[in-house]
Length: 84
Image (cartoon, rainbow, N blue to C red; front, side, top):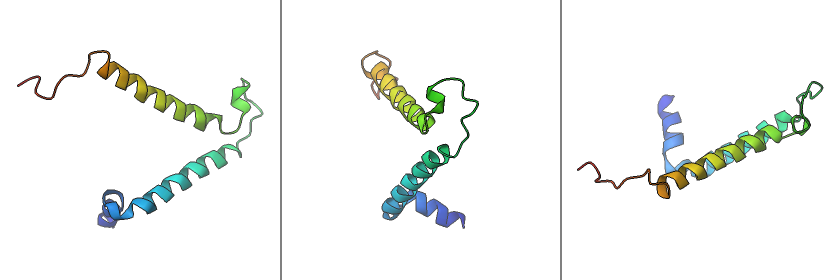
């Protein structure tokens, strides 16, 4: 059983199936957000369906770009043979 799971996520033959599964999970998460009651939302953007998914995705993308910028332009990244 575990071998099949590891093969599914590690083998390149299942790339199309993994991608379809990934998109299906994304659609289900956004669709589930439409089913949540918004009666007790404190802010305007909390009442928008799908806001949490968009905010989370945007935050992750921003975090990646900021860390790449700090690594390359900020001087935090070193050569591979820095400690040799």
